[in-house]
Image (cartoon, rainbow, N blue to C red; front, top):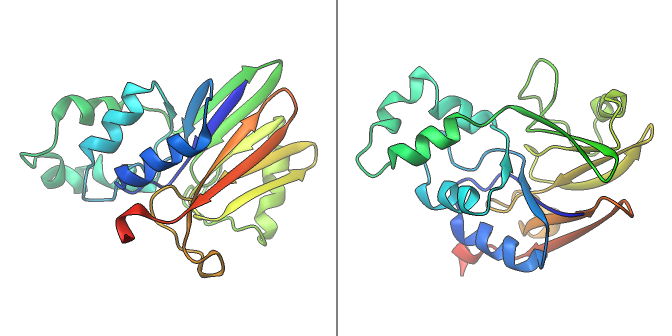
Length: 195
């Protein structure tokens, strides 16, 4: 199966659409959280994720907007209540078996503190290899990564909405995982919002 992976869209529907186009034909799309910003819900991004039946986990930005602290943002007249409710029903963790291989996906970490930044150079990354999964998908850092750790291929697609890595010229990115071969391909592209 070919799985397209996005994360950290932060309301940038143009970035999401570019990522989807760059992936080519995929069987499923998985989103590792932060589809919108803390106090700015994105009807366009959530509608697209729902339309393509993406598997989607909530990130720290969803946590804020969907909490009591985000009630004013939730009540804005432009927010589609049906899309808001669809987002609210999404899990914080997905576990699935595909092609006989176990995949897990979460936004930042599967353990407290749940919003810790686990960068490619972080020693905390080793803990992801303890999850007894063939593939571990996460986001949060906005930095692409594919690394084998203790028999698990740990994948971070980077960000399809807000490039933060100056070394990569703040380019956006997504990934495609072939679950049969175990190969991961990254696509990088300029942020369409920046012209």
